[in-house]
Length: 495
Image (tube, rainbow, N blue to C red; front, side):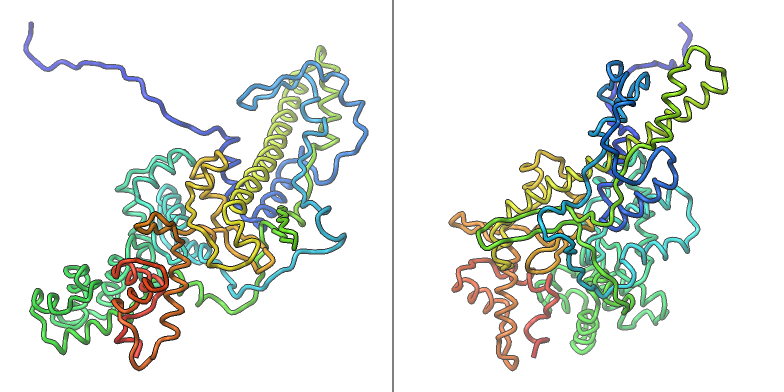
């Protein structure tokens, strides 16, 4: 046998989850809040002539004569030999806001919100100024949509890579996502796109260094070394260890710490506060009415949403073509295919809107069931620990679906308008097995700090003891973490 390398071919089976165009449409509609959905529906009405606005007429007997021949498979591919699949009353979605549960003519209250441009839109404007490939732009837009309200990226790049593949059909490696994230981290204000507080502070310090070009021994480089090399000691306020490790003069060290404390741990929140002073209105996606007898009523707020139906002109044309099927010319057959494609797209859009309605209602009802005490009383401290998984298990939906419903959606209650994210909070379990809401603990902690003697504010150790006396036995490091999350400085800086 001749010496040399041989190529060995092997076969391997691999399962790859892909979404159909209809599933992708459902996912995209699910992400849209009420106002954007209305715009999307009206755009579809303009684009697809087979789709019309208005209620279906009650009499449609003349269009249902051939209904026995229609079939539909699991993938949604519908036979067009008859028109019954499009012309029965079930084709008309009842996603219009239900009017029966409130007084006739009564409109949901619109609460003004001081924010002229959304956080997402502002970052997309900055993204538009960059010279990127279409693939890079898609990745960057998805990352922007994954930022939390503080402007930080709490998800891992691996999980985002999986989401892109499953829900958007986009293949992206973690290296590509890392490069796209670096682009976002270059946006204003500095600190956006950081994956943790340490990275957030470092981005802000390094941005100052790039802008000011300071000397190598300047204060900014001291700040950078403290956060980069001694971050754990900094969070624990082990000042002596930091000074010894970095061999810093006490005066320089104190100045550096003072400057670090001026950095913004929540760049996204500050961006939201800084954008515009014009008044715009939050349009809630849900209306929750609570009555004195303990009844809680949930409705979807689709009051400006046009009802959808199949075009009567299109159905009549398809019917005529179907009657003369045997004598059709090539041009007639092509026209028939065009009509069928448009009707297929129209029916798919109607079905997607109906599925969005059902998913939203199912999810919101589960949130109400899990947080019922709050909806009855309006007391924030009554919110129980709840995460996406809890709602997913109650509804039977995927966690990613619950996440999409909860993002950018608002609910109007008897006590005000809240983002759905407001109802999700971590839990804390005591040694006795009692589960407490983190939000409840933060509220008590803030009350303690608000009522303290400003000349002698409580240290974290003292706050820990006070919380224990109030029935919240949590560790000092946990108290410090919650205090930092509320952007409350340490005791010596609260004097």
